[in-house]
Picture 1 (cartoon, rainbow, N blue to C red):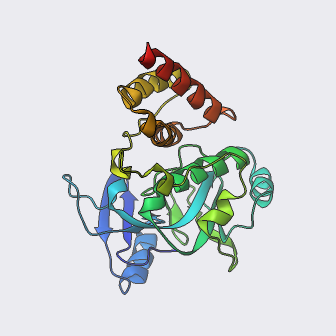
Picture 2 (cartoon, rainbow, N blue to C red):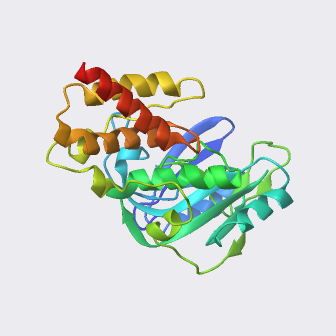
Amino acid sequence: MLPITNPHTAYWVLGAKMSQEFEDAPMEEFIEQSKERGNGLYYTVNELGFKKNAKGNLRYRENVISLLACFADFDSGTKQDQIKRIDSFLTPSCIVESGRGYHAYWEFKSPVNMTEELPWVYLQKAIADKLGGDPACSDPARLLRLPGSWHIKDRYRPSLVRVVRRVDTRYTLDELLAEFPHKVIKNKDYQSKYRPLKYIPTPVPLKEGERHAALKKMAGKVFHGTASTEIENRTGLLKAWYITSCNELKKDWEKEVDDMVGWVLEREMK
């Protein structure tokens, strides 16, 4: 499950973080050499481009050029319990034993364009919520432990990261989205001549207790001076912002946003 082009792997040695870029040919040799040295190896599931940021890094959200899979990280409960939770959902393409727990992957039938990032982020959060995975595992440039490498958090008791199940099952984005009851607004629904996709407000991490005030503030900005012809589109923008900002979504999150929109619009008309 390495990215299609430009694999990017980071490795950890005695507390120092380093990274190196590879073509396909020397990858296997490097992995074996790193295992012999006792290094931990990580990789990005999704495909990265070649544009470095100001810090000289390739692994950052805006440099992801296509989405190759949804994935979930499990480290709570027993391993037996984790497997039961994973098996309660659609059959994963791959399950990796990562140390304390498992990583599960639902690979796509073909690479998904980054214009579908928001539904992908929603899926990441929805899968984690349904199966009890890590809710913070929603960054498309996230690093996961590389199968065949060593988990060395405890230097004196390393464990091998290994594939425990692998099947040829693949999914489309829509097939995965169909498993969840919440209405998901696809990116194409956000676009209009009034507010194109690039103007979706920048997501910010919202913790429990911060959401209502942040939603109120953002709704005020989005709907200030809004024409009636823009209301539906800007509501979609606000929901997109809210979905990507919350680590965990409440079951009635959409009603909460709609109620806030109604309150803000009523205030705007006074």
